[in-house]
Image 1 (cartoon, rainbow over the protein chains, first blue to last red):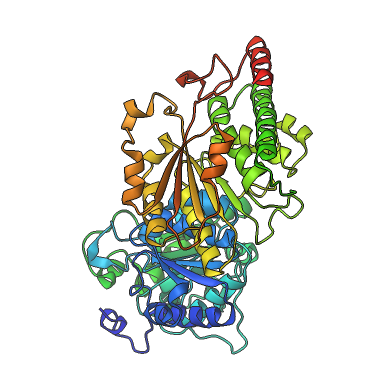
Image 2 (image 1 turned 180 degrees about the vertical axis):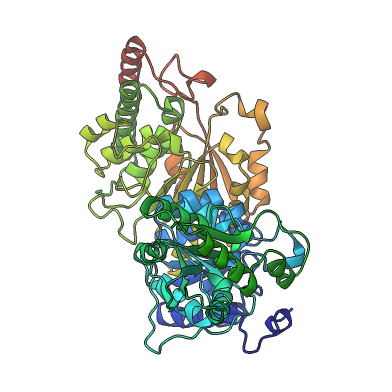
Length: 321
Length: 278
């Protein structure tokens, strides 16, 4: 299914394209860059990479534990290895390798979780990856980045390659527009991006939900509510300065294509209770998702502009006097 | 280290180092009141042969790109590994006294960022093989002359990740990769054969496109021969090193109960006496 079929808005992009194009540029500039896949060449949009550098794409087949061990070994051998695999299998099947061989060992490895969240829609919860933030967020040393659009995807791939240490990139296929940004916008791992200023409530989003947060802010503005929209692409490390400023507003909504437990919302809530407790409404999936398309699942669980508007109003109402 | 060409001199050195490694390891476990002495003793001659007869490394440049790599996948045999690295000059022999003490760099399982010479943070079983395969692939991509050695236990081969990696290594003809199986026939709770048998083990690796040799894992001469120069384009090599868990300590040999545990004062003194006479 193409991005356009998934969503009626125009100028929507599949972030895998930005990933693949940027990775090719990074690989062109640095011969140490290699990619390891689990029969995921096509689904990672790396067919062109494989044609151009057949020796630098290492397909271990359907063997995720070995895939992650191999990238740790490649880093030991001086390479800058990227893994590119469906996020559900990469993070679930190889979690112990990610813990021991990548995070605890602090290896210079880049893990790219493709088609995360409910991108595989009707294929069901075995193929959904709405647990990955929660699983990975407990691992020290590992940076976790969920880009929101093609520009940020490209910047995140470059930043990951330049970063000394392990990084997890969560790359979406669900169609998203390029977000409005100043021409001098800069991306940095661990830095949040305020896409819209506001003083009544902070909406903190990541990945494909950021564009919905911006839409919600428009609706809220029409109702006289001023919402700050924060793109929290880095789940780890968190931008604590941005979070303190958000908590100072006294009402927060988080929205992510992830379980409501342990993801972006959990990370924000953990921080806020230790700084300045305020209502935090966490939007996400409450459990294993039922059968349905991505769009259906987003609508069913309120991961829409309307759902964010409603949550923002509740958070504001719940503000302490 | 200075290359030694004369085989008999080399074997004498390996035997002397193995005696020292076993004495260090049993003392470390005794003082820490915990550890995995059975596996330390079974793997010692393999480690001593590699570090004092085969591998090229510089303890002053432990991350030199061209070094040979050894990954101890059975990371619980850390007493033997740390003792070997100390004898090889990567850390001070005196540092071994801190084994498993609070805040020691000598954790119960090795950490590459704490201890020079450690290549991988092993401990959970079945991790070393995939990492070694990755290093071997990097070496082949760079046409680098270094060799990659990985030591697994035998019970450890019950972990499926080893077979994923074995398939990858065989298909890629990683001739720069050597797997040594510390075949002591015991795992934590029982004999391997009574738990989930591995046989026919050599045939399994041959079926995965590996070259396989069986050797006495306590005979440095046999190990040296098995570890002879390899053509990087050849099949990966699997050395099934037949060993005795607890080797060198009478009350510990081939005893499943000594997978982990610490000797009493009298047992420790007896162990040192027996090891010095070996």
